[in-house]
Amino acid sequence: KKVSLNGSVKLKKKNMLIVFIIIDNPSPSIESSNSNNDNNNNSKKPHRDSILELENISFGKTIQRSLYIDEFPFPYYIILHQIDNLPEVLSDGIRQWFELNQRSN
Image: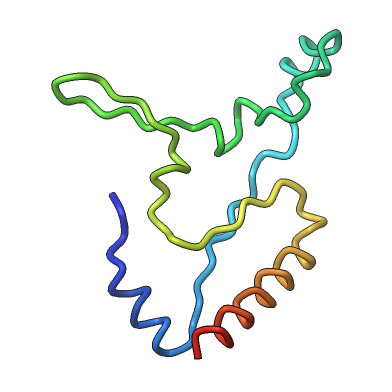
């Protein structure tokens, strides 16, 4: 389930950072956009095809549901909804990484 943090610790010692970029579904499907024409209050809710809506189902003594993103196996990730924002998001992430590196040294 969770990735071992040993790899993250080794990368930290080498001042390296790996960021997982998730390009998420930016818009609802055609059928759901047609059905929501009269109700625009859900515009901030993630779309049903979004990674934010994916669920993990585990079977044991009981059935347990959890959001996939809550158990995402990588510690650093970016969810990108609009590809046009990629340069800005990447530069912001790199800036934050440098700030974290300077604080820890």
